Image (cartoon, rainbow, N blue to C red; front, side, top):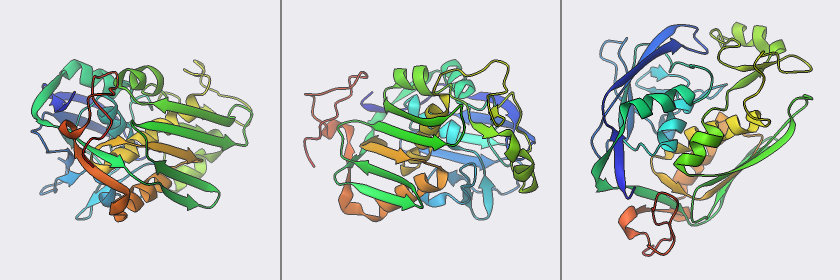
Length: 304
């Protein structure tokens, strides 16, 4: 795990777009070292390749949208979270519609795709964005910050005036195994009373009980209930991981959020990138062997 990774082979899936309601097909391809994660709309002639980069984020209402040369790809956050969660640094993603398919509203289908494809190591060291000083952003009563940590940790808190949610907090200590077991299956959620309003705004046209947790004023109305007792905050962590992966590197830092959302996550990414003294990009071979995570990847930085 000192080295960059990609898919071992091409893999494909089809499904509905959550907001467009259109059927879309997604294919993931192996890519060379330092390629990063890049997207292409195959339904648009001459479409540019769009890099998964925090500075290419456009709209952030109810999803994260990448935009470049007026071409957009919506709802990228779940796929990005799974690619990061599974340790994939390089992949070429083609989609024949305006957004990534929502599947069941979580990252579970994408995890299955990557397991089916297999993972291939590349002969180049990973690079880490190591946080050296704290960065914080606020938006109303919501806030997000990142601070130094020898590994990636996400501490997320949410608060909703709903009897099924109320206040929830979860601390996620990143490893691939922890991601698959604790975060990857957590679904997106929404209120039944908001559906008409969202559809008038051109959102959630493909939403259903098959791809989201839906709540009326008192309870979850999905017949299968919740996958975790705190699935709501776990999904917020999934979203945060996908949005923060747009920094383009593996992360060594602790992210703490209160009432987080895609807009706030992108503000945090942009503020980190604007304050170059708060971080350093460190090749994996510059990291000390004294402390390791479960991958055997050393974290303590020797040569900052």
